Image (cartoon, rainbow, N blue to C red):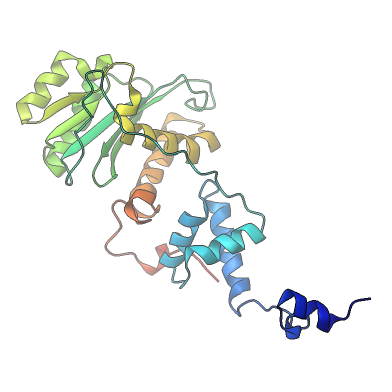
Length: 271
């Protein structure tokens, strides 16, 4: 049998490492409890967003510590996304319309009824019209109804123009509701410009496509809506959470439009 002294000398370890039991920090149990509670509330968030929410709640922690505890507790760590190359048009020119400031480029898109989750419990379908500010990533509006057409597009845009002013560009695909003559005339009349993507190239409307994916993954795929009114209320509540609380990776894990004043009864309940 080889002695402990000899083994430690060969491995280059101090003998005390074989006797001292590692101890976690005094606050680790409370931190894990808060982390698990946030994971339960926001089941589709990875450890980086959970870490951002914990810091917002007052914890002085970094992502590495949360990642270690996350793995120790057996929580799922989302797979890394593959890197994406630049977008190029057929003529070889790179797509250059990029948002440079708030209200520079808005984009909008429909989330269509072909998805099974876009139904209320009675089997009837509904659609949503999602409008984003590409620079701030803020979701400006989500209109929910059984049917949505060009009149609804003008109606939602009118409300936003009154509240926020007119953007320089509005990006969309070539859906009939967006290329309708009435919509184009209205946008031109208020001084904005349309920016239609190449047909069959949804990735050119990447900001909206990314938002729609989060919208489905974090809300629609996990909810049963019994009525259209319930869907409208829950979706609007989620939109406000997305804008004011949800950490956004492209913004340094800050929300797109954080609340200036948060009353104490609205803060997350922690240990």
